[in-house]
Length: 373
Image (cartoon, rainbow, N blue to C red; front, side, top):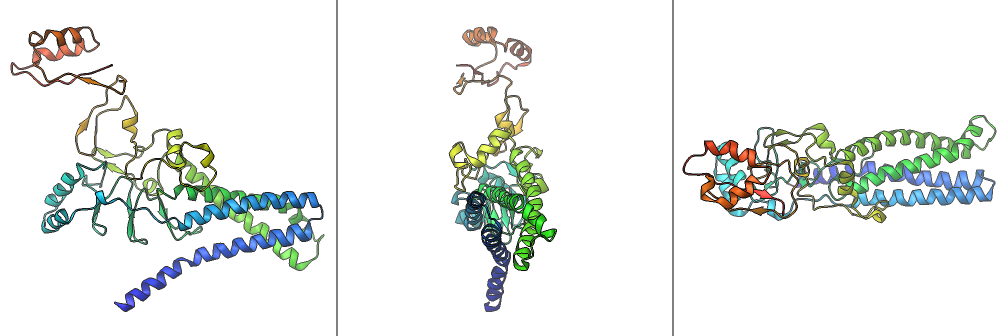
């Protein structure tokens, strides 16, 4: 037991090596830009002050967003999604797959769960012993389920952290301010870089720092540009990286655009409605990460779909007000209820009523009608 624990700790230390490398590179870029470029090479005091002010604003926002993306812990599902002791015992005692699926289906009736596995079963994490909420996935590195998990530690900009519901905004701002930081360095240092390249400045130490600073910033800027554009597209279409790689499944099949409710609404889900919070790495998103609006819920003309409880839901073609009036169950023959017959005759549903009425049995049928208030 001692050896696996030591190996696990060593592995966790190794995960911090990329973060340490990024911090070292950033601190070197700060030293090269402020000392060698601004204080040694720049002779105009006004230009020096302007460059330093812009640089420190970008550096401050970049450092803030980077720290928030690294330090914000992954968010796990709430207790209501975990199996109780009795349900867990009953689930473990069942040996058949169908019986276990039925138990999970009955438990999920009380939860806002819509996504399924590729086989149509309820998504269940055997490691965490919980029913996975929509867009939740288990991270093998963090050893926990993460709400709206996007990815864990990209290869080049490894943050040693899961990017999910509570820190996706911080990650987006980290990419944005990192790109601005690199572009500012490239834009301000390039004229001096050209002079150094042509040999007009001969200080070897200064030349080395400025040349490497320009080249490294340019390479990072190109990579960050493509990565930021990719995540802007994901944000606009309300997809995570995992959902882009593997389409989420629902009770009625796969739905690649199920969570896409419009560009503006998608943006507000991550950045919130308060515009003053958008530029800063503070959490301002909407919701709790356990449930999300679905495309068919936001559309008034969507076909029939299956909700999280497995019941068929029909969306009408008429936009109702928030308050709906429902009539009690009645017999369809109009003689049994002349008042309802008059209501239907004066509405747009009269043709539907007369087309269905001849096929109604004498026992009647239960009907529910929603009308404008």
